Image (tube, rainbow, N blue to C red; front, side, top):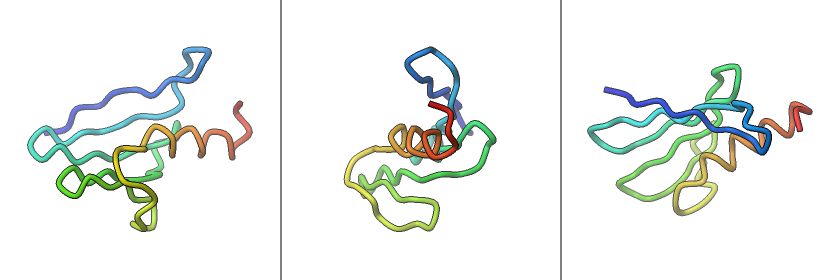
Length: 75
């Protein structure tokens, strides 16, 4: 089962979503258009980008979503 939470910017606009697997705690970050931007592996405590490369230790999915939002020129 998945739990979906919106990620909002400073102006309270939805810029993406984080889907959490309620069993394992793993998460998938999606941008506004539902494209996957990254993954969080709860067991290893690492964040991976779209290509499954480790980008940070800890959960940085919200930062990846914000970064993708900035790339699209929606500041």
